[in-house]
Image 1 (cartoon, rainbow, N blue to C red):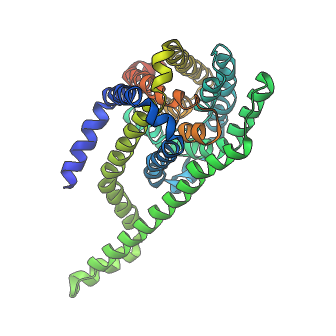
Image 2 (image 1 turned 180 degrees about the vertical axis):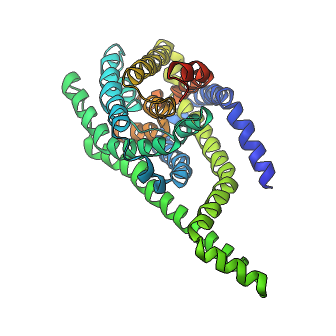
Image 3 (image 1 turned 60 degrees about the vertical axis):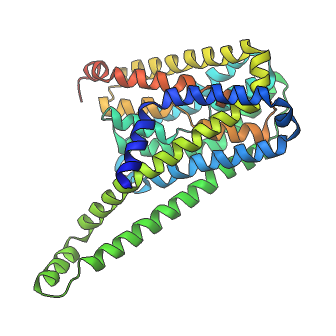
Length: 363
């Protein structure tokens, strides 16, 4: 069973881009065919989207390793650089780009999609290129908590610039539902799973007889090492299940978002292409600036890769929930489309890892 899940997760990860595009296409077909149903049952669709967003986010919160924060928290320069990219460069650029989008709701959705925190996939990309996982974890956690202030803050800035109405109360409610609650539940789940597994393993390693007594004594002397080993084994065994659950939930969410906005996309395809084009430019620009800046600041290769992926890639499930809970009807179009361009750009940057490594001196 475990091997089957791992195989399915690996398959979906490999072809996630194709599945994402397929989900969008299926969503558009269903949504356009049954657009009257989606129009009549707006509240039902909204609740389904919020539920799917939470289901997508919760597994990633279980995988978030807070115990690693202390290891990389001393890398102040790397943290400051990444926070600048995440909470200054990306949002301001997004607000500037949003001014060319003719639909105000879609423009707000575009801003939100570029202020939300990093996703679990961001850390996955860092792992693929041998980046600094501890630093990536710290940056992901900081981006998560920082977004609680940044999202309503930048929406307020956007509303003052464009005179658009932004319900900040509903925005904060959406953030609580999609970030705070899943974070707490995810970390509690992680803690309980680790405690339960360690307790069970300790009991298994206490058999009767001399050998069992000796082994138990050795484990007591070096219990921290034993605990790390058990945690690593648990993470390895459960990761495929969590990854598969996240990807399935995300694909269904993308399909539902596309279906809910299918009528708009078919009747105004220029807006959809504009969103994808702007996001492609945004991602290439952010990654370019991060690469040049990190090199000039003498960051190591592993630190740079952590900074780059956490700063550039965003959790569109959070953006989707905020869009349907707090913003206008067109705002959810953006998080439905962004995954179709975010994934290929990120994968392209992964494929450049050898060249990037040489650029940073291979460290």
